Amino acid sequence: MRNILNASDLSHSLPSNASIDTHAHIFKRGLKIAANARYVPEYDATVNDYIQLLDGNGISNAVLVQPSFLGTDNSYLVSGLNQYSKRLRGIVVIPPTSTFGEMKELAAQGVVGIRLNLVQAKIPDFAQAPWPTFLKNINLLNWSVDVHREAKDISLIVKPLIAAGLKVVVDHFGRPDPKLGVNDPGFVSLLKLGESKNLWVKLSGAYRNGPNGRGDLVALEAISLLKHAVGINRLLWGSDWPHTQFEMASTYISARQSLDRWIQSDADKNLVLRDNPASLYGF
Image 1 (cartoon, helix red, strand yellow):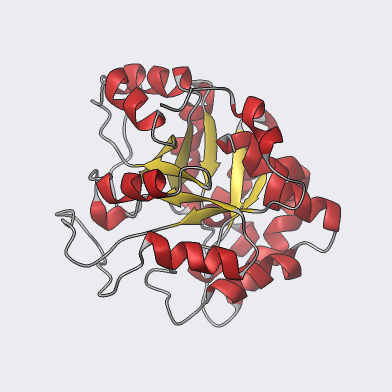
Image 2: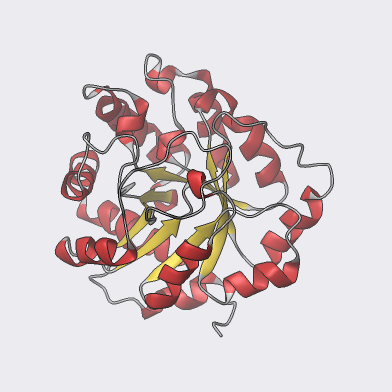
């Protein structure tokens, strides 16, 4: 049984050349699909497929994120963690009624946080039961909370989570409106929340923020602002493999190469690829 330690107690075990992908999904056909699924891939993306990609691209460790279409059945993700326990950590989707015992059991299997994928979903009232107890238990386990929502609403979610003392990780640059880019008022609000030092942002899935190269242009502008407002030590890289709904827009290789375009400094890149995720996720 893996001990539940502070992430900073574990990060020094990684070699100096380690690198970490903080956002990828695994699944296969035939799994139980959530009733409210917006998109269901008609192919397999297994943990073994993913490990081969990591090995082929010089990535030593990774964080698996529960895909929305599998709902709260995290069994396939957990099986991947168990298979590669030294290399992988997991972010799960669980109901706020989950008990501390259930959450602690997940932690023992390599889970390091929960995901709130609230795209096209109602924003919870975090002040109402069962949320206060749930958030307290997340804190007790030293977990983070991954948030996926368009920028226009994201502060409504992130602000109360930060106020509760939680570590909050925002997916895909905060999902600014493709037309507005970094001028999206929601993205501007996200930058202000960086002052809390409890906010991390994933440099991932730029194609989700605009077609025909627009997302990459937004990413380049966003990174400069994020470095200043959030801090280079709060930025993470994720491949977003297997690029669900955007399978033709990216490959693992191009996702990795995108970071080289976005961040030129080797020192900054080492923080984003290794030190930041190692500290946050307990590698």
